[in-house]
Length: 433
Image 1: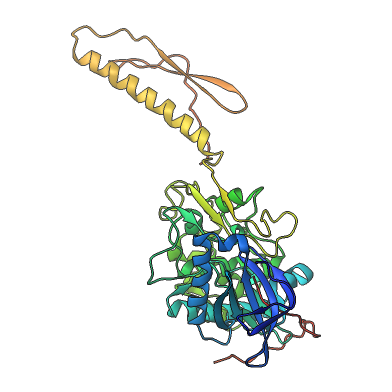
Image 2: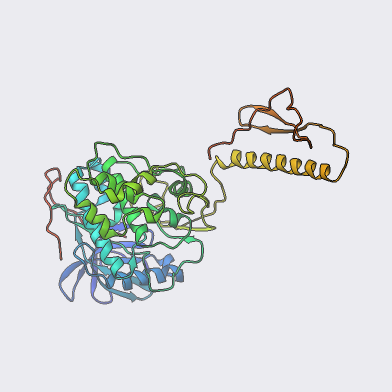
């Protein structure tokens, strides 16, 4: 059934106000009549409840989030099912989603960005220590109160590292603008995938823009694999600038070694460059070529099945849907690969002809005629005939016309920090779907 105001779930939770709607369900403000306290209740959508895989993800959120205890993680109180309606009872958070703050205030003050990133990072480290990868870190899943205190929420598509993954081989879970390259390729998400996503959040807070955008969710996901990250301005101070850029490295081994290491780098004295992250920061802005870094650039297609999490905070142009599960198929290669492939084919033909002529010369006492073999290649803007002359004799004089080369295309709750720029006022209470 679809929940309505005034419904009581499990004879205990009175639904009083709808807060938000997301891909997995609807979040309500509710009153726990047993403990006499206000809570947030996430109710699984009726159509999603019929999908067993979706329902299992919902139950997994209860198991995984319920086992986490940290001041910067939204607490899960209870889970239940009532007449076919599955629901999750969570801490009712006071504040606003970071996504709303970014829309209204970005670029945000650097000290505030540093503090929010630090709190989110130590929350992630606590989750990773418990064997849980969030897999969907984004501004909408970070709630910030009026004192600048941040809480990480919505482990809805998280999974325990010790459990068998619920996804099939080649399936991707996440939100495209915050997908780590390895996730976009359908590889297992790990703790450093969360660190990458948090760096994207930091970049967005500092600039008001996401580092990777495409015309669709698929092209956006591909951009994380094939495009270098835009460099942050020199106006962004250290250690914030290098820490964020290093965490955007496409090779996980080039990123900070953990969420905790990311947090520690942010706590370096103002103006100090985290030298151990400089190489990673450089690699993040280096154009991607075949074979580097690691083996990420060698496979620049998305996996066959792509499960992209709907964005509850989707805005026009986000390329995301509010409450639809999107499954896309894409077999396109980046445009630069076509001319490179053409050049390789031309080179292969020349080599074959050379070896064929040499073989003929070796089996005959009479030197073969020096008939030129002409290979033609085409470029996007003009057509150039390239003549390659071959001869069995190593002392044969070169042809009078010099062949033009074929150019290949380039391939314990921390103390809240009061920020002078943070607006004060009455916070909004809410949960994240």
